[in-house]
Amino acid sequence: MTTPQEIDQARWEICRDLARDVLLLGPDGADLKLSYLQVLIDEGLPTTTAPRRVVFADQGFTGRLVDRALAPWAW
Image 1 (cartoon, rainbow, N blue to C red):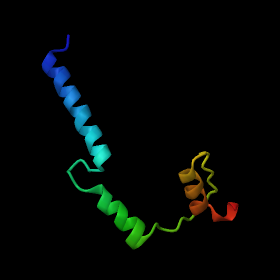
Image 2 (tube, rainbow, N blue to C red):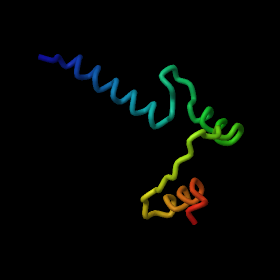
Image 3 (cartoon, one colour):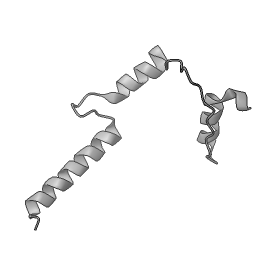
Image 4 (cartoon, rainbow, N blue to C red):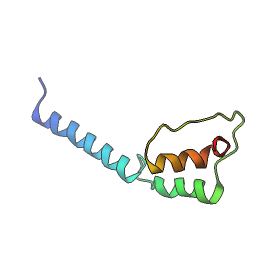
């Protein structure tokens, strides 16, 4: 049988993990947003050795923009 302390500890760990995901914090508290932005803006994504065609099946405006940005040959 689980004790209330075990349940509270499990809930706390779930809440902490979700907060880190939302805030984009690594397990050590590092700011992942900064490193992601550095890769996307400063360094750029590395060129792939095996390109693939990707289709985004989203009816929204953002999905069309992403689809167009990542697959310009499809337009």
